[in-house]
Amino acid sequence: MSSKSVNSIESAVHALANDRLVAMPTETVYGLAARIDRPLAIEKVFKTKGRPSFDPLIVHVASLEQAKSLVSSWPTSADILAQKFWPGPLTLVVPKNSSVSDLISSGLETVGIRVPNHPLALELLTKCATPLAAPSANRFGRTSPTAIDHVRTEFPEAIASGEVFILDGGACDVGVESTVVRCEDDQVTVLRPGGVTKSELEAALRAANILTPVLFASENKKVASPGHTEHHYMPTKPLSVFWGSKAEIDAHKKQLSPQFQTISLNSDARLAARELYAALRSADQTEGKSSLILYRETQSHDELWQAIDDRLKRAASHRLGSPPSDQPHVI
Image (tube, rainbow, N blue to C red; front, side, top):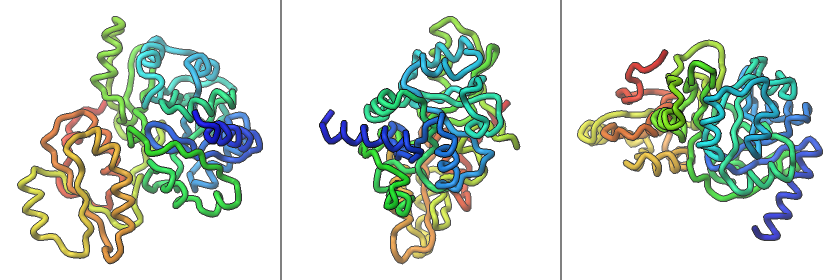
């Protein structure tokens, strides 16, 4: 690590200790981080993002041991999944203890915890020696940031005033938010699809001779997971998303109004996820186009498309066609 990076981390640690926020790189998206033991800073996270208090924050930790210090119980399923996928794009929702405030958990008795897989994030967490609550570093409901310029666009005033310190870690590798799963003794429930798929979760549990079923959660009024509101990840311009075969998409393009800026995703799910938010932001800034349309071919069966489709459904103002991930699989 360069001396410049070390100095940046030291400055970030100092900012966090003084109730300021840090735009922290992770492998998924950039987070807007605050120390969990600084109530004023946690309040600033909600205020800076314009985030409603009912939407819980994910807590980022440096290690499995630090995660266990935040909980009242640690199910066997959580232990298996943490050891398999941490550091990485998996958030475990488990019963919290009193070290996690109700403001962070939105009054729930559980908290989402993960170890991010990014060297600067891990270095910051280690140097800080305190878990960090870090939702995505964007205005609430808007497109998530996967590069530091996205963060600068979101919070120019807060950055200029010094209330938000930037830690530049380059482009995010995964590109969509973490998978969120609730771990209980008798069941593992996917609350939000992400970079770790349901099949990967099931395989990890089977390998440890754990027969706990992995199920998808149905939508409900009680928000138990971040990024779960009906409209989220939205660009400023109206976005239509078209799911269909290549032939259906080609036919629709021929009838397309010139007012639309078109977006097409890579056929490789990993590349599509990595590029998704940057593509939305770039299209949103195109001059002379009042609306956006994103074409998503549905032939691929890679499970990561479930996470991408989840983001697209919430980002869309209008939906055309239906994503394969809308197949009945909820509990």
